[in-house]
Amino acid sequence: MSTPTYRPRSGPMRWRNVEVLEYKREHGASFREVTRQVLFDDPLLSCQLRYFEVAPGGHTTLERHEHAHAVLIERGRGRCLVGDRVYDVEEHDLVHVPSLTWHQFQADKNEPLGFLCMVNAVRDRPQVPTAQDLQRLRENPVVAEFIAQ
Ligand code: MN
Image 1 (tube, rainbow, N blue to C red):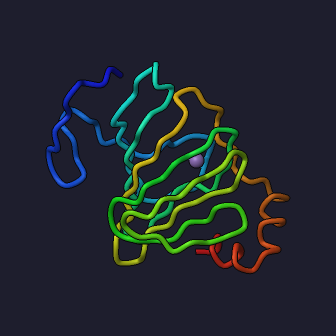
Image 2 (cartoon, rainbow, N blue to C red; image 1 turned 180 degrees about the horizontal axis):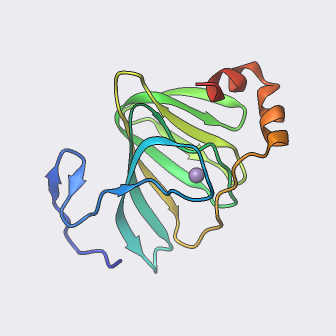
Image 3 (cartoon, rainbow, N blue to C red; image 1 turned 135 degrees about the vertical axis):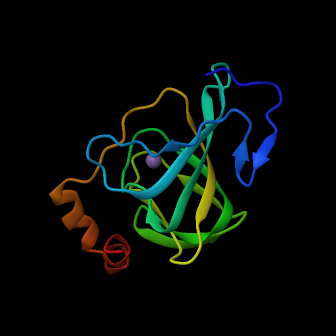
């Protein structure tokens, strides 16, 4: 995808000529009600900027990978798991997802959760937790409560 010099807004959290994609439907990952828009992709910058939106009550995949994320909450509120901690997030909060750290974003029951996500352009495939990983994650009651949602 080539990124134009100017990409105006075309609606609420929509941009001209940016396709609204259903969140990756790969490797049987569990997710609910998530859309993805790729806003910038410049090979020299070696990163992409995407906008994700999780509908009320929805969530992204619980995953980890070698690449990292910088996330800026743009709309609504929700919670996120990063490693062994759960954070309440709202507009303008920043979240750093380090390499090989389990993470998941959940929208509030009554509000969507929209966020910009900067990611490496060349990146490894996300890993989803094995039964053993899930067992280990559930040993922490805070994490257990989060992933049960
Ligand atoms: Mn991720």
